[in-house]
Amino acid sequence: MTHQIILIFHLLAATIWVGGHLILSISFLPLALKQKDATLIKNFKDKFEPIALPSLAISLITGILMAYDLGVPISQWFSFSNPIEKIVSIKLIVLFSTIALAINAQLFVFPKLSSEKLLPVAIQIILVTLLGVTMLVLGSLVRIGGI
Image (tube, rainbow, N blue to C red):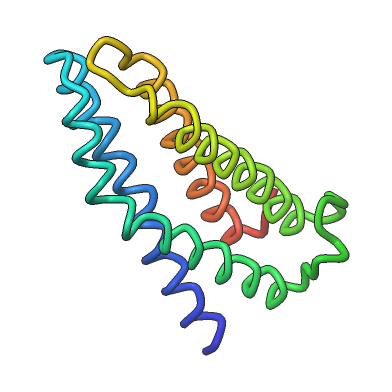
């Protein structure tokens, strides 16, 4: 039962993180590019970030708890020794990539964001969205026993 509750929180947090990035990528980004209007991206970011970052943190915490519950403690991470551990390790690599992109966005991309310089933020948004979807797909593979 505990695993199920943790899974529900994990899925809710992932829904916010991935869903928000999909909305940004599919709806707001094309409009901002078409209108050459960086304020559309900035306004979305300002409203989404306060719920997105806690969601990512909840996903991380619940993911670690589920990894332990599935028999993959920290000592086995990155050993790629069994199908579930492979998923945990790949998801962690994707998570670290996402965090690196988030740091890059905060320090370098968003401070230079302007209507004339939308390409760097567009690349950033698409990459983070693809990484989020990748984590979602990998998580779904746990149900069938891993990869």
